[in-house]
Amino acid sequence: MAYFPEVSKIAYEGPTSKNPLAFRHYNPEEVVEGKKLKDLLRFTVCYWHTFRGTGVDPFGSATLVRPWDDGSNSVENAVKRVDVAFEFIEKLGCPFYAFHDRDVAPEAETLSQTNKNLDAVVKALKAAQERTGIKLLWGTANMFSHPRFMHGAATTCNADVFAFAAAQVKKALEVTKELGGENYVFWGGREGYHNLFNTDMKRELDHLAKFMHMAVDYAKKIGFTGQFLFEPKPKEPTKHQYDFDAAACLNFCRANGLLDHIKLNIETNHATLAGHTMMHELEYARIQGALGSIDANTGDLLLGWDTDQFPTDIYLTTQCMLVILEQGGIAPGGVNFDAKVRRESFDPIDLFHAHIGAMDAFARGTKIAAAIRKDGVLKDFVKKRYRSFDTGVGAEIESGKATFESLEKYVLGKETLNPNESGRQEMLENIINQYL
Ligand code: XUL
Ligand code: CO
Image (cartoon, rainbow, N blue to C red; front, side, top):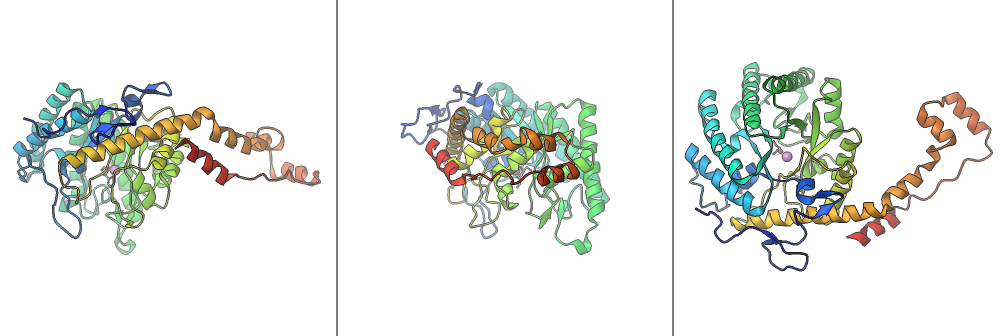
């Protein structure tokens, strides 16, 4: 049975196509910087927004029309959704998907029944993966929706809830391994606080580190070799999330001996909520060897909350791809569309329009970034800008030979300092625009 009967496989038709159900820029076989776009970008459909989103917002109830969904919490409904999901992902031509445990299968009264539900749906997911060749980019556990997690999961004040969360992640790791998942994500759903008057921050952070070590140890024990990813977000739902931004996450990992085991999953709307650009977060992670994957979306600066919109801004995707190409790609991570259609875009077909536009925006950003890199316009400028550190006193500073005394002697022995040069920001911005 077809759930999207009016849609056939989305094809690449080239930049002049006017067909809204075709790619204009994403040609999966096209080679950019030595890699096919499909292997470079590793596009991923997220299960939660795309197949579980309802259009609910804090002011209103569900709006999205999803004729296949009977609205129940049954395993049958969940298994049917697998069919819907794989028809969608296959028609879209997306090589990967990602999910939280509770997106794919319903939670029951007891953990053992919940795990049975999950096993039943995982069986269907595995069969669908084998049938279509679509792979799991990452799995994760939802430890924020159920009321038991009101105080957090790994950072809760209730040890029993910590234990429950541990059992849940144990199972999520097993399932991710079973499905050949290439990564496992930690996003600290409610790992944070609303008020320091009732919070032992030191204890909570220690518990979070213990929890992540247990996950790393268990992964090793069961032979799960996927990459662990930590996803920064500064706020929402708590006013302060411990995984605030890339810098905070890396400091947490470094302070707790987790750096060798964990990379970052950087999300655009989280970056902007933290007061950073996406490019800043990507570059900060990259220079520390910690850029693992991205959650590709965009926020709305006028709304100010995590709106999780589909990325369509070529300037943004170009910036993302400048950093990703610089590190030679994003594998074993990918470009995961952690994005949802607006509640006014309620037809199933809107899911196609949203993903096609985002995939095209990233493909186009990739080609633009590659052209900028080929001409070396930024690289050459930046290299030249710092050339005073290539030789002489600059090289002594960089190599660690210089001291305060030697630098004082150097300056006292000079009549004048070498003059500053313009940063040419506006010229560079104009040059980037020539490529768009
Ligand atoms: C929440 C968010 C999550 C994570 C996975 O803002 O981004 O969906 O990506 O838990
Ligand atoms: Co995310």
